[in-house]
Length: 545
Image 1 (cartoon, rainbow, N blue to C red):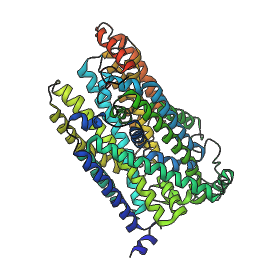
Image 2 (image 1 turned 45 degrees about the vertical axis):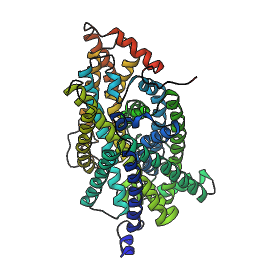
Image 3 (image 1 turned 90 degrees about the horizontal axis):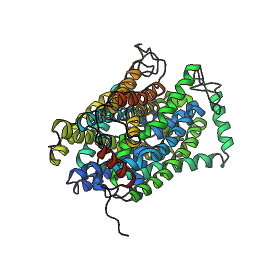
């Protein structure tokens, strides 16, 4: 029976074996989560793991949070099909990480407690700013979740030979339910442990594939590129045949508009990370700034190594699997890495690498869910609805309810987004983060005159403009690759709106600040925030000298 299953559909692996590996991973991680839940007693435990993690532990968890399914499946697929233009994603993600660190990471950690809204509202009027920041956090988290869910659907469909939309939709629903359970049971501690395990597995798995691909060509990278080009030249897929995989322009060089689209994508990727609430929240899970810096060092090493691996994996998939087979598989481009694993090591290796990709998806969605729920409970419920009078028990209870709601919404959206390249979907989340969050964060940290009106203009202006342009872009309708391929209401020509919405948010922040300049803000709070952000006073543990 098993061989029949394996031989049908896409002829990849053994579905029964793949399911067994998935279940083994879920059992191991669930055990970790249940153990963590025993020490999750206070709100700070649920949101930040009690700030008890060491630098290296948090470094692995940050890498686990940042290296999403988009990094592994989406980028490898984009390089395999588009060559150089796909590689630009990995450059964008890596540079973006460095921008986030240099600009905001430490200052943000020193100022806040649990969420990004803590920082934004520190010296401004609490309720309106918290509301705005929480809504933008929820929007970014939902977009990111959507990408991960779509990836999960495509991946598991490939492994279990599920071709139909209904089967893939069931898979997305199962991932959503698992995510809800992880967060409800383990809180931030459980999620962090899952992310650490996943980071080790992902970097190790990608590293082994990297070595095997180079081994296959005796370490001759030029030969690998030549083989990949030969496969592309012999392709029968329209638009792929004859493509120069080493030259730019396969995806973004077709016209002036696609070139502009690429610039927009680059801006969104590089600036978006510094506004991603689930990555920034990770800096609150360590006790001191020294440990925060150590965690950054570890994260850079892991993330940098991983993106180096993706280059070889992408071209390896192009040369050993070929774009035709990749585009014909369920999940399309997202199937490149699993198909390469099958070519390199057969059924067992495919099962292991796929379990790693599955772990990646689960860990990232759990991190996103806890960030979004913390933002709603801590910022909207406790600060806006209850006006600061909510107990910690009430906050955690609301947070848990929010996780369930977010999980259900992301399942529905994930089903709608199946078939899209998930690196592209993540780039949209980055555009929302860079438009709604980054200008306000930078102004709050570095501009003394910045006020509440400026913050509201910047957040809402960036968020609404970005979401509006996405809805009316080719990403949603008007193209065969759109979410709604049979409809056409796209009047905005670019797939990524970053080039319009990000500068607009910065400008609106300045305009709003000057409109509201007569409303006096608290200068003492501004001074306190400046001292805190630079020194960490108030958030640090005492250090023995």
